[in-house]
Amino acid sequence: MVQIHLQSWVGQHPIAAAVALLLTYFVIDFCWKGYKIRSRFRNLPGPPHHWVWGHIPILLELLKEIPINASSLYYADLLREKYNLGDIFYFDLWPIGMQFLMILDPDITKQIIVRKPTHKNSMLKLFMRFLVGSHDNLLSADGHTWMKLRRIFNPGFASSHLSTMIPGIVEETEIFSKTLEEYAQKERAFRLDETATLLTIDVIGRLILDTQLHSQTAPNELTSAIISQVAWIPQARPTRPWEIFNPTFLVMMWRNNRKMDAYISDILEKRFAEQRADRTKGRNVMDLALDAYGKGKGQSEEALPSVPLDPGFKRDAICQAKTFMFAGHDTISGTLCYAYYLLHKNPDKMAKLRAEHDEVLGTDEAEAGKLITAQPNILNKLEYTLCVLKETLRLYPPASTLREGNKNLFITDPVTGASLPTEDFAVSPITIGMQRHPKHFPNPHAFIPERFLPRDGPDGQKFSDSSNLAYLPFSKGPRICIGQELAITEMKIVLAMTVRKFDIRSAFEDLKLLKGGPGCWPSDESGIQKVYGDEAYQIMMGSAKPREGMPARVSVRKQG
Image (cartoon, rainbow, N blue to C red; front, top):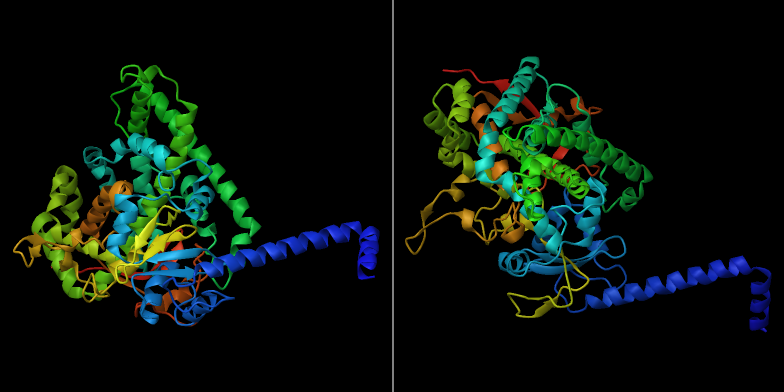
């Protein structure tokens, strides 16, 4: 009887019956998938796992103890401490997130990124497509595609070429210094990261495109599009997972990419025409990349001026230019903010840094830029400055890598010896978790640049924490950051030209004065304002950035 009534109802309501059948299929498929995922976590190391909810309750409990806008890069290390976990564990956020294999062990990390490098995770690839467009890029490409791109763009980041960029970096830093002086005169609070971002975009614009963007002194269309793109990236906060479905985000990503593509395309066409007319002109990253591309096609250097700008190269060049612009400015601007922050909070380290600058660059800070321009190699003598930057990057790494597990890759738990699977997991070596781990860095939350000075080891050999396997702010192995030398060189110059002239301090107490200003900084909603006891914790804005853009105040130091 029931079957007869059901058949009758289906005959009378075919569309409703089809929808009901479809919904039933999705519910059954959802439940079956959930069952398989939850079963996968049986007997795997990790925090207490709920058969229905996985680790979602664990994450929600953690979020009650830290600022809601704190970077997700903190989660693994905080979970390790909270639940006394080992340095390898699993974390299950289905269906609101991925299933992770968290790694805080440097030896296992080396296996994944150096010995047998695994592919970048599909979510990273998707993120980069939103950010720079659909073409392959150096950050997310794999295999032959990545090797081709790396070969083409390596010449532009070689030491010999970067040395030619130093006068331009000095010029841009002089403008940055004048901006700081204006803020000092006005006695105004400001967001240091926004000011540093304009500096670093102008520098990377010179390196990549041989173009002065003048972002520090006037609005620039390319710079505005870059900043807007970063601000529109969904933060995907666990308490607000719906943010990633904001349709405006997709529209703005497309709009900003069109603006950037058009701007960079015009520069490339103009630059290429100039190079064909005069091969004696200075060379930028794109010029050198075009040379490498042409040679890879079997074209002689003499023939290159007459070869038309290849559409395939131009498409790749635009995508890589955007990648370099994003990665280059994000890492450097955030690290500079944290360097000033840490130095102000540690006056003994600041005194040591200033003493080194007096000794190497002379006591007249106003002449530092001229001396660096005339003698670029003098930067190599700023050993303690390098230690300050390395220690800053240890405490505040801008990113971690995310790799794809596979059925052939198993890792060995260093404690139990168990063979652990990676298939269907996002394999996540946690940089900040290793670099703040007491096992690898004693007193891990303290600012101690001296860690990176050479010292005697137990065997009588000199060593420093630069060789520590757990130290990898620029990653390691074949995928090590192509721009790390540029980043260090630029930051050395900026510190050398500013720390003796200015006192820069954080001013989180003045945040109320900055509300409503430029930038879309995700604010804390929990009332908790510290991570690791630190008020300047990192948030996610493309990469890990200083909270609220590092509110700051600056004053000009009295000389003599």
